[in-house]
Image (cartoon, rainbow, N blue to C red):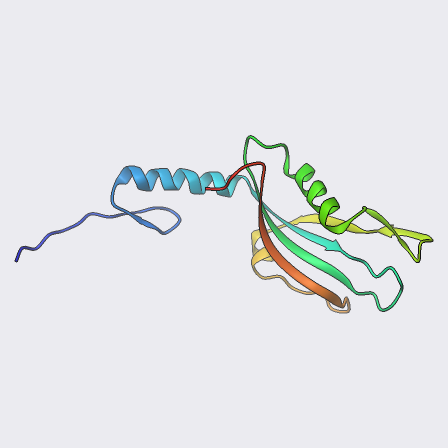
Length: 135
């Protein structure tokens, strides 16, 4: 029996690699992901029949690589496709905001806190890649 010592390299994201080159490559990918990742809160699906004020809330982690157009355009497109028109009407008469989004911190995305006094039908959390494939 022989005793062997193996050298492993740990990247910034915590994974182990057999070569330094692989670890450095993973670090570059991790830095790129961090640079192009943003966090958003979307308020949507308002109560259009005045039945109790319920609405939806979605927390989004968005990756938009450097080849894609800006994240705001992608977020507008996503919200329009999933939540309908930005202006909606209560009982087809009174216009209100159908959905809106604000940028939040990573901490807020990881630990969403409900606002007291605002009942919600649903709260969702998802990750989206816009304009390319995340590695």
